[in-house]
Image 1: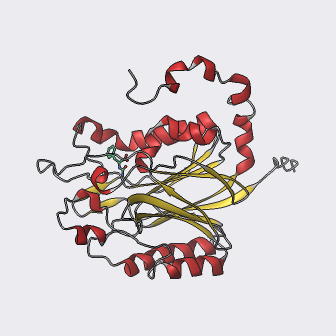
Image 2 (image 1 turned 45 degrees about the vertical axis):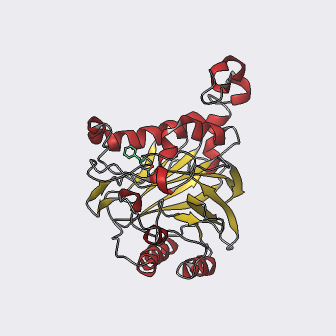
Amino acid sequence: MTAKPATRNARNLVLGVAQLGPIARSETRSEVVQRLLSLMHEAHSKGVQLIAYPELALTTFFPRWFFEDTAELDSFYETEMPSKETQILFDTARDLGIGFHLGYAELTSQGRRFNAAILVERDGTVVCKFRKVHIPGHEEHEPHRPFQHLERRYFEESPEGFKVWDAFGGKVGVAICNDRRWPETYRVMGLQGVELILIGYNTPTHYAPDRGQNPLQAFHNHLVMQSGAYQNGTWVAGIAKGGFEEGSELLAQSCIIAPSGQLVAQAVTTGDELVVAEINLEMCRNYKETLFDFNRYRRPEAYGIITQQKGVE
Ligand code: ING
């Protein structure tokens, strides 16, 4: 009988990535919330302590259409969080002692629109509300496209940037969809000691500006998150809204990635699917205190170009 290998100092967290399948335009908030609750109960039965839902998890991906009528556009936004329909999600999570991440479209009382995500601790306290920094797509209606990607018309860029919060026994950060493609997203949080980054996404597999990228969507999706995880010694969770949604094939491939860059769990369907892994936040030290010891090896004084502001001649 070989001796049981000594367990590394563990700071474990049971993480549940709650991938969603398509949400129909006609689906009500309450119908969607029922799907979220079903995944939450499944997560609780599996000992999950933090469940993460995708970007814009309460509605269909509405930036695929051009709305002239503001009232119809407004119907896809939340003016309060929790709202009447999501209060049951907050109450159930608190009763079950499970924390959650939820992406949604935010319409503020000043009329400002953000692609947002809220992070709530197991006792029901709100850890943070994050707003998407990198907004992809286009601003004006482009009728020639098979479908629109009007995020730049419907959302403002976050003024706050990327922060890291003490929660779930570690240092947690949030990014949304296109944010995951920019190395700065991970490094700005890496410099703050992040140990887990939650990234919801809605990614059409058809990319109108360059169809050549279409067959590479799954590869690029994991490439950027695995690189970001490894180069900053952090866990990364990618949470998809996937499947054939209102005529658009959305990439699934939800996953949990270790600080080594390894995929430790991933979805195998394009529908509602819970992906669970027990992650050891202490594993981040294996990279943060060796290869990526920023204080010892990183050379900001040699990176002159990175300090230039956008558009500076
Ligand atoms: N979606 C996409 C994303 O960055 C996109 C935009 C689509 C980029 C297809 C590349 C290819 O994943 C959002 N919502 O940011």
